[in-house]
Length: 400
Image 1 (cartoon, helix red, strand yellow):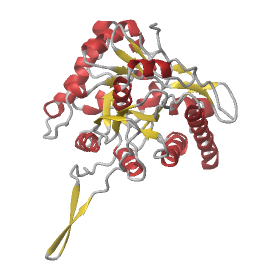
Image 2 (cartoon, one colour):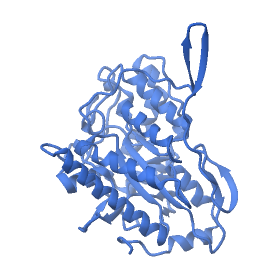
Image 3 (cartoon, rainbow, N blue to C red):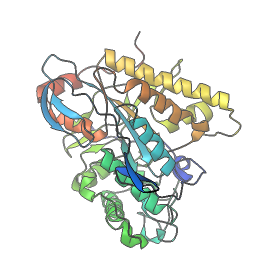
Image 4 (cartoon, rainbow, N blue to C red):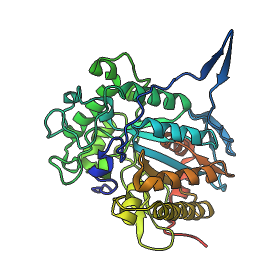
């Protein structure tokens, strides 16, 4: 059943460069190679770059190995499915945050999905290349890159792809409710227009900005999306998604922890975030950093002390732990966790996610993978087995 969706971050959530920070990304371009050379007098020593921690192979019949290194297996009837954790980051445009999460990958087996905003592939100088549906050229509710940031952003994206992370689409102008022509009002033709422009920004990033750097990414590599503010009408956007080769959508939120379902009309997996009670009690909240931020601080860091932020971070970490325990001991539904590259609430949400990833990924029967790995795993299972796990009741709160 298709429903109009809403929730998640607001325009203010992505407006500061990048995704919530008033700091500028570093203008120093990182190396995208896998080794670096250190020269001392007459000798040169090649030092391998740290690599992500490899995944163990789940039980079952091997089907294929993903770009992340995760091996998909077909789970036998009567066996519990793997416990998947899928972390993702909207916007994905801040060099220091790419470095932060790469460092986490060097500690535990963990890959993620970055939902890229197309505005981060244009600068203030070239922004008129974008014409959002119902908007004038060069209008966006979120930031553009600066000219010197663009090569850094391209290097970060290419390195992520080389390491086995996934890039999806967060579209372009991030027009949410409250602005002219928000995404919730768009027609299928509008969505087609928006997606065509996003694809052109990927393909033509060098020509659009008069630079040499190119993305190692083609439109056909984009398999999943998350809409701005989780808004949009599936009856209008799903036909456009299907025509652009999209096979999953992480916009439709769900009550409790349960297995994803497929919209058979458009062959799109609906893998949105869940609502789940926050640690310590209270009504359920969408499991995204901005929603935690709004619940705890009404989306403002003004006057919040480091001690208060640390307490907020512990509450979010406790929520993640409750979710994991409920799913792992219950229906094994994937945990879908959404974040941004941000420093909201003195870094409370980044710290909570990082602590949870480091303490949980690599536990027995637990796999922290990008969305595409979860989708490919579901599609590799016997349909009767998958239907059985999809039919399990949702985990609505913590388990004893």
